[in-house]
Image 1 (cartoon, helix red, strand yellow):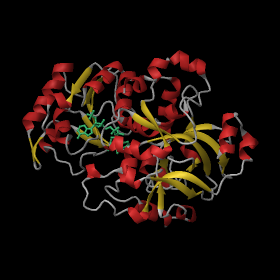
Image 2 (cartoon, rainbow, N blue to C red):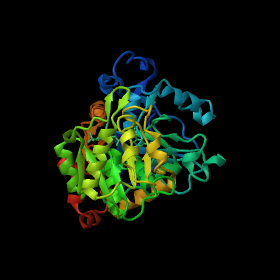
Image 3 (cartoon, helix red, strand yellow):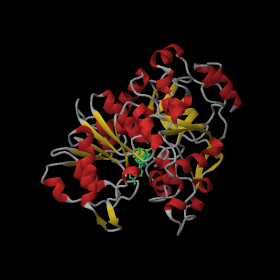
Image 4 (cartoon, rainbow, N blue to C red):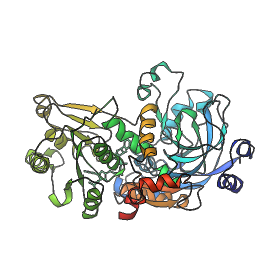
Length: 445
Ligand code: NAP
């Protein structure tokens, strides 16, 4: 690995990179099939990813013609890293086994280890024989939409592809590792003004928020729209706030601490609700919701912006969904991509149909959407929300912090990058965009 790192640091490209011999094994964060039952009888909150995420050597698989080998300089923790490491709602080995039955290339993924991680910023080391647009030495970020481009169902919107998968969650050889294999159609140019770790945290969360709010398939936000955002300093929420501001809308952000209130205001979000301070209790017991509490939230939103939200950016799930449906404007949209607190959802359907509201589902983003989002980051219109950085050996600590809702924005993980701050190739552009803007989350978290 040292030879690879030295070549990257020396700015090597083309044959100088392509001629470096790749190792047979590499360091990777992974869970083990033999441990997938380890949390039997343990409450979700008590499951500790430090016990299930191992960092050790795994074999480098053979490269398919449409794939590349990446040297991951940095990666990030996503909530799916938490799901895999606590084996909820299902162990991810079932996904790998299904992929293993699809093709000879798919078979490589069905292993007794699962290398996790659905983000990366790094350098292309090898390209398969069918790869046209990328070369060894290219600096890239990786989006996590794994699709088979020979499948006709993948061609209107690849998120509708019958065998669409999330790389590093439903496939093996993810980004929390020194090397990865990814399909060439997952690659995007790395923003030149950002460091490796700043570049590595965006693709999954930012693209998800882009599709939910901006793309043609979900929220289709317009200038002037009011957008209510749960978890507004969290991974997807912090990009949602920026997209609303950048698109001429008004965000109303919900968070759960004074520190997050300050962070949100520093981002330019004037309408902030501290849900802990307000003490909302949407569920009076495990089975009963309290409409008066939904109404209290609705009144709070009206007191801030004078109107109801055109769009509610929904992801906490069971704990908030009833309230989200209630507070949405007549004819408005509830856009959902997740259910962190529980996926068996209850809401009062009268508030939906009588007021002609729509619930719209959204999941990650297609290549065009991820590319459009990456371009906004490259232009400096949207900033990375990196709040802290861990090294790969401490990936379990980082996953635990996300599991316990202790982290703002995104947590970066250094893989091959030996320290923070490396990989910036256009310092002038960085200065033009503004160091303070780029590092806001790092400074305030
Ligand atoms: P995150 O960084 O942990 O942020 C989530 C935020 O939600 C937290 O900061 C918290 O903010 C808020 N929250 C958590 N539980 C809540 C509750 N019960 N009620 C109200 N607010 C709550 O996670 P993330 O990366 O943003 O991901 C959020 C969810 O989206 C996860 O379930 C993840 O798996 C999912 N996701 C789905 C996709 C997709 O493609 N479908 C992509 C990315 C993420 P406060 O405590 O400050 O309010």
